[in-house]
Image (cartoon, rainbow, N blue to C red):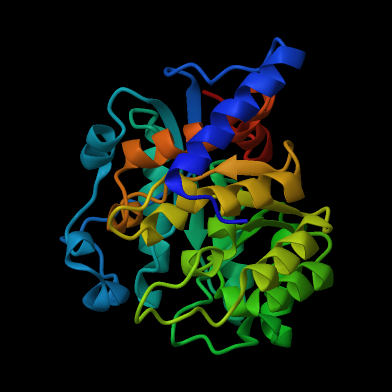
Length: 326
């Protein structure tokens, strides 16, 4: 069901009052509560080559380093897990070395990293071995929604073997897919039962699928029900957790929490309170909202949920999943 802005806030207030009446522990998270951001992007265009930025919005075609991240998160108690930024393939090792050194230094919000990698590469095993003794190396991501990765790419035998190897090495794999191919990713999680998966960005749904069409608007290739079925299939897989991230970047001017609520709430209900983590997706989120706006909107959406469930989403689950301390 789609709620307009007024209905959304009326629903949130009513739900908060109803739940609070029966559960004294329900209250909004404290403004200074710990946040573990499991999707921190950093890039320095004087040092790195990100080919995809050539076609990206202008706001992303600049450097975003630790100092900019600190400014974006000012006033929030944030620690972060770095997420690879799809550098040129020849620079994967340099990116990994840089961010792991950053995490080891202990002087920035970055605690650990999910690095870029190519599971289907013949050199993937040697690449993983290079970082085997590094406790801050938590997992690998290969973006699967770029034009260079056709449908079914992640189900190739070599790719599957590489993802299975990640599980044997005790590392996770982040799934960043087109929404129309989510069932391929479900199949991958079934083929790799020993590997932990993180579903990025709530499965990348098109927010237009969750509201009435506007004049002249192109409808998504997937429906809200298509997306929900895929999320429910992921939630049945014990080796998958859901990352509440990415969707703020898709907000159109004038959009807000009520546009994100159907996606967030379905993911939280499907995966349950113990299998969800928060991701800032900064600076990509700037295409639709600032970091602070994204946090504020998410706090509004989950305000009626038990405070313990809120804490798990913001930090506790990530501390456990990524085995980090603050």
